[in-house]
Length: 233
Image (tube, rainbow, N blue to C red; front, side):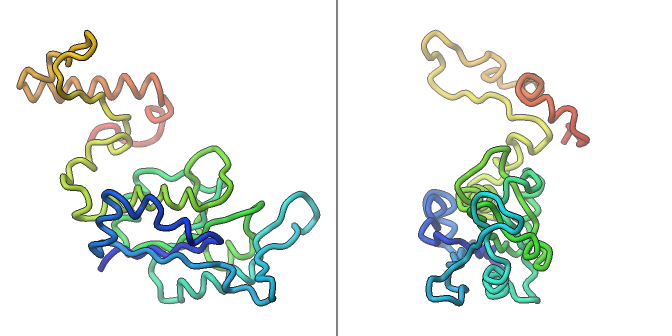
């Protein structure tokens, strides 16, 4: 069974976007995964296809309506749908490589792209939405975040990457940032490839890569070293 993604959005024309190119695009064409972009406005009931209203209690902006979104979610994800229901939201739990792998191992995902000030909390609770964030910053809507999430997941689907090991030797896969990479030419603007990488000694190469990964992680992401997770794979 292929990975099936259903995206609920006010801008379905944003999909597949970059997901229609490169590895994800070839996998989409091959049927390794599928993508359905659903227009939320199709589930509004008034002539203006209204999907939002003013926030209860006052305040700036607009809030996406629970009733309209419920109809959209129920259309995309009936009660027997095993796929997780995700809401792209800056207040969500940060997306991790571990969660990406979990999603890639599953049947797919239903992804709601928020807009305006956010989504009526009653809809989140009533439909069991898992709020997911891709970083501590604000986007104009959930669509770019959904594209990022799907790109991260699709590349891990079986057969998408030419070398499956590539997905196992990357940043975050073992609790560390990835080591530096080099390729030809041997010398570039006076800078040489480290001797150990052309030594042919695979044990020393592995040790060097590990040491460099730890060094980079200490310098750039010490929070990863402090996290409660194993650092040895």
